[in-house]
Each structure stands twice: as structure tokens, then as C-alpha cells.
Image (cartoon, rainbow, N blue to C red; front, side, top):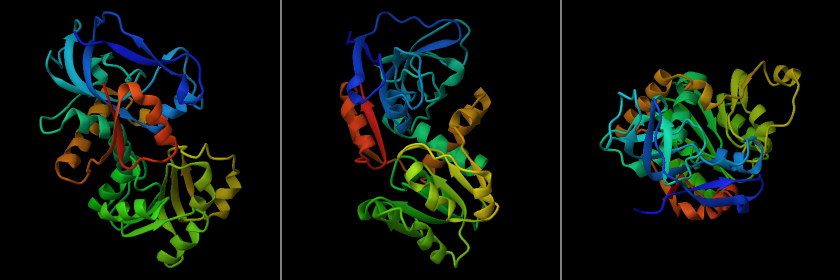
Length: 326
């Protein structure tokens, strides 16, 4: 039998705090399944938890997203059998492991045409795109939307998905190369470079009106320009902290910006029931199958090399999705 192990942190800090430890025998309890993981998703939230920005009880595992094969089922499990291909991306943390026990009701079946690598690369990011577009912002045909970090893991799914439903997309990325990729994903306007002055470019492209929705996963560095890019009574969706958390602001700032709305959503609140979870995953897999949610795996790392992967992610040295391979 190949070695079973997991990665944990005993203290928060830089990537160097990620440690490896062996896994003892795992037996799923009632309502649980044991998954032999074939691929693990790498997400920015993993770095927030490792650094302490999002507090975890210590010691703790890392990661919430993985895909593989059911090795054992506990009592009362009727949805899955040994040998089924499944994915889990809704917690609890602990996906950085060769094997993992999860509640069966928090797992989703992976359709035959979709590989474990593809599922691990897109489930969390893709279901994030699903809820952001279709249930949070409720973007409709004809809306003009600004997407930050448009060549990143979530951005590279947001852009083609938005185009598929008929939105006009203004994409921004940190470099010309990444902006070019956003253009390949279907963005109507692909901007690059410093975030400073972005709002002026957005206003020019929209005849001074601004955009109906801003999807901002950058956080602190982009807050001011995002606020200035929203049209009257528009919506600013700040869903990530790649550059740090959004600074404190006053309700009056929203009035001055044009009576705009701001929300700070999280995926967990949009997949809080098994029904919501599976409906979101089903919608995602439909979009993947139809070619509207392309999966670009920009980097593959050994699971044991997770610290290196975290450094690359925090340095914004990746494009698309990155995965860890046990």
C-alpha cells in the first residue's frame, strides 16, 4: 500500500509552517465516506487560513477541495458506493492529504467525462463563479461587468461564463500577458497594468456611466478604483483578499459613489444545504460540458511541494487553476 499522509499546520505563518505527517487507519463513520484523493485544488483561501487571516483551530489541516475515488462507506450512506468518483470542496479543511473522510452529504458525484484533475481544479472556483454570477449579482443579458484578476482561478471562469449569458465584460489583469489571456477567454475589453486609474478607463469604455457589477477578488489594492467604477445603484461584489482585506469605509461613501450596493459574500452561505451544494455543482458541470467554463490548469505541483505552490500563488505567478497531486 502506498504511503498515506496529510499536510498540517501547528502554527500560522508563511509557507514554511506547512508540515507533513503520516495518516493512521481511516474508517468512515455513519453518513461518511473515505476518499482516496487523485487531485487536490489549490485556492487563495488556503493561504488565508495558513497565514492566520482566517483563523483555524490549531493544529489544522489545509485545503477544502479534492477529487478521487470512494474507498469505503459508512453506515447509512445511500448516495455513493465503493469505486464511485466524487469531489468535495465545501469543507471541513483537510484536503491536503492522500486520503480523506468527509460527510457523504457534502460530496458531489463527478460526471464520467470530467477527470479528477479537472474537478479538483474547478469545483470551488467554478461554484464560486456560479453563485457570484447567477445568485449573488444576478447578472442579466446586456449588463456591463468589470472583472478583476481576470486571468486568475476564479476570473478565468467568470469571464467566459459572463459572456455565455450575454454580458459585456471589462477584464483587468496585472500584466499584458494575463490581459491577453482574458481576451482569449472572451473579454470585450482586456486591460492591464496598475490598478491606479482603472476607474477612469472603465468610465471611458462605458460613456461615463460605469458598470452594473464589479467582481473584485483583489481586496485592499483595488477597493478605491472598484468603488469609482460602479454605475449608479450598481453592485460591488468584494469576494476575495488577494492583496489584503478591504479597508474600513463609511456608509456615506456608498452614497457618494452613486447609491451603490456592496456585498462581501462567501461560498459557504450559498451552498449551505446539500441541495444547494449539488445544484451548484450540477450547474457548473453543465457549463464545463458545454464549453462555457473552460478549465485551464496552469500549474501542477506534488502535494509534498505545497509550500512552493503557496509561494507561487501569493506572488501571483500562476494563471488559471493550480492543483496538487498526491
